[in-house]
Length: 124
Image (cartoon, rainbow, N blue to C red; front, side, top):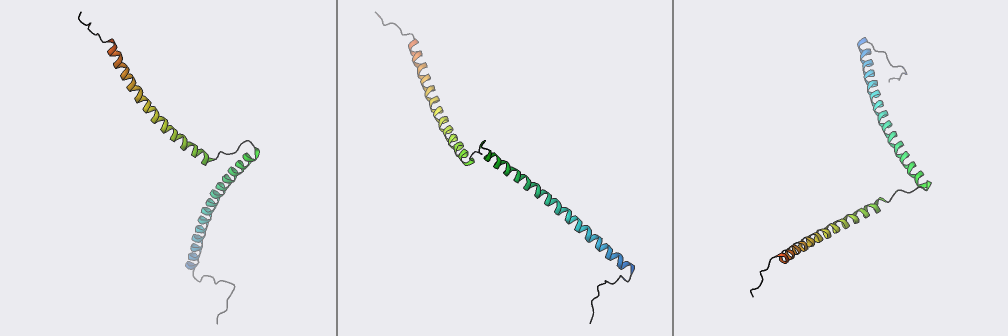
């Protein structure tokens, strides 16, 4: 039967003590590197949350001030789609009218040409 002792035995050889110290040092360096990385991640997350909170508080203050409210994005997108469709229709109408105008100009040129054409007088 062994009894547990609160004291850890000292290394019996000098090389054994150095090996334990080296393992502890390596372990501490790894722990420190991990802690530094975690602190960096936490710092980035805190900055993100602070920015988000600031934006939300700004929007809330803007709404509560009565100066105006943010526009309804969905409503604006529907309006844009409607205006784009109108533009397509107006462009089509413009093309049709341009074609009609070109045809009318061509007919007008032909009539003017015929009007100015010299017609020989009929024989007496």
